[in-house]
Length: 126
Image 1: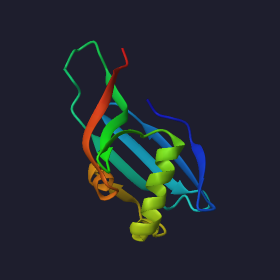
Image 2: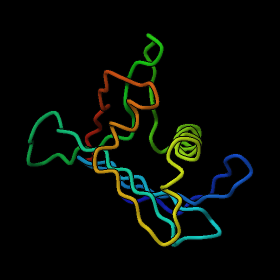
Image 3: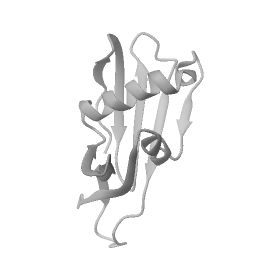
């Protein structure tokens, strides 16, 4: 399911983001003043089973950080702000004008941010 375009401000800079879920969770981020810059993070995982009548999605991930169990809610502003803040500090090249950046394995980004032991929280959509 695709979300609507949402606004978020990180370090006094305005961004827009949108996402969609399923077996793959895709998060798109763009600076509000320059939508020619687009960062796409792709979190791919395997659903619990292949029931032909159930469409599986995940929007949350349980993980560990600093030896504590935590939940990352990929569609929530708090965690999106954390990701944007990290990208602004550590991956400035992603904000290059006119150049789309796609991270096909966004799990690696979460590992760089100090998270480990990922476990998607699956939801049966129907």
